[in-house]
Length: 326
Image (cartoon, rainbow, N blue to C red; front, top):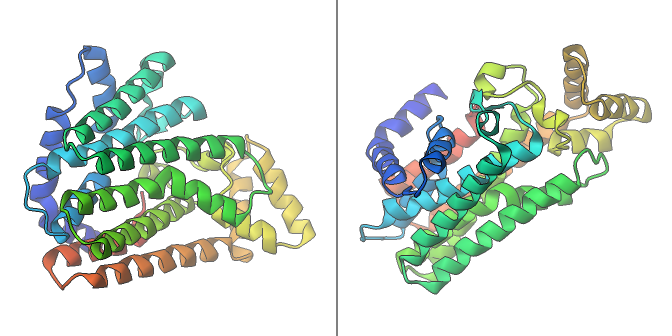
């Protein structure tokens, strides 16, 4: 994984540096406190994966303009906005290993800063003067909001189905990956075939990314995660490993798992027991296989394009998604 990550960073280093500059240059809030809060989340060690995907997708679609780096900031602003809102809703303590913004500033100020970032994204999209692009950005924002609402409504619900889970993670995560790739094709004025190909790549990558992210909650490495052990489960997020294991378990072990899940103050030994049960009933391996299947489909989507360095990079990103530990 270290070799793959190093290889990726060496190839896309220039793109990432230019994205970093664009994130600062295009923030432009009127109030210093908005800038401070936005920068607290924007520059806390994020991977810049979403804007990078937009830039690379535009490149593979043949985009020749100079607006790609500026436009790519939309996807980091939208992502950062949802993180600010999530931390307030979930009552989280850590984000990327740092205290959450609302532990430093008031909840209301943090929420409104998230709103500003959403609006800023739409303003940047409007500068393209392409209604279809503005519409896609608006639809992404709508779906992300609905995904978070659905997840909130199903908080702690042990009866959530895999189909319902998949719908939630598409809306809260994969739609942003998919949109970043799809819009790049519109920006490049490419064919519908290529637009569908990068859109499929983004969708499958995003689904796998969230599935792996959910699996990471069942590790005991707080330092690597940048958040507390089992924090997603304590927040009532019932994810694929749990959904599958509950379905496969016998009555005795299902009741044991349910007791741990329902107790938001479960101990480390109880959490370890839950992890063992998830492994025993195939919850961990099933979620891993589902993520692998999505990555396979993502890479197959790229076969529409001729072999190139850009296609190789997108394939490397897909491979890295399965290997990441934080």
